[in-house]
Image (cartoon, rainbow, N blue to C red; front, side, top):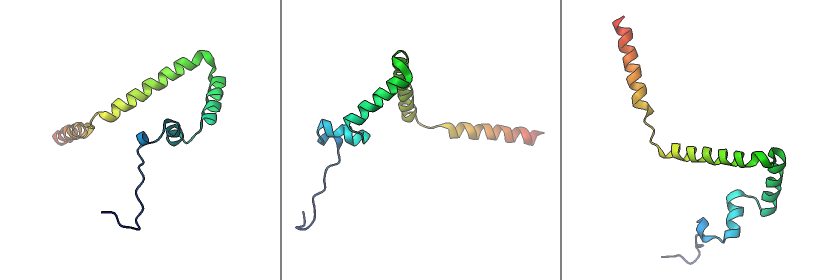
Length: 92
C-alpha cells in the first residue's frame, strides 16, 4: 500500500536505463572524454604496443575475477603449519 505523500522509489538497475546513459553512469565520463582518453593512451603507448597492453589488461582482469570466485581457505593451512612448528619447538 502506497501512502499519498510518499515518493515512488526510482529503479537504479542499469538494465532499465537507455544504452547511452549507461556509459555515463558506469564511467562517469561522456563520449568526448573517453575519446580524448583513448587518443592520449594511443600517443603514450603507440600503436604497436597497444594490442599487447590491452591483451595483458584483459588477462589480468580475468585472473582477478577468477581469484574473487575462489573460496579463501588459507586459514587451515596456516593453523596446521603453526601447530607443527609449536610441536617442533616443544620437542626441543
